[in-house]
Image (cartoon, rainbow, N blue to C red; front, side, top):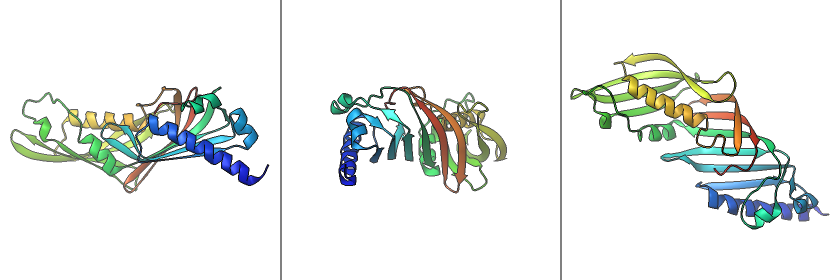
Length: 234
């Protein structure tokens, strides 16, 4: 069996899976790489499968920079691929990488509808800007209208992994300027925690164990291991 035949077989499967994912997801670019020889492919066996999505719509108002699944040894129902579906024949293990920028987070946070308890607050006049720094901190800069006057203030949070690795929480730190309304801080903190914890797709065939968070200037990267019962319909 020549390397050229193996490579061609892998490319065919790559394209099939890319076609399937195009029906299942909304992404600007999707790339697939399988690791298997022709005999394995004929049996539906894979040494591994990498799915990279760029500009993936994780939720309404949010496209993330990169979303990558690396799936380990797996068995795939070949007939299901022919029907343009992906069906795993047994559970598999893998890893996940999520990259999201401060601009992407800012966009989704400004789409939130918050109902403040204080009648002097005007929720529709709220603005928030998310800033990611080199020190591992995330800063929310708020601007809002209170009793007809513009007010502004900031809240610094530190994204941390839950002790059991089941998700990401935001540990609130310093506040500066005028004290931001608690409703605003809670709303954006919950939203960011849900995004980084992948609450939109958690348990939809896949469970995550979060292992690392990296914040550099302008972006945040989350890494997790995965247990896949059936292929997640992301």
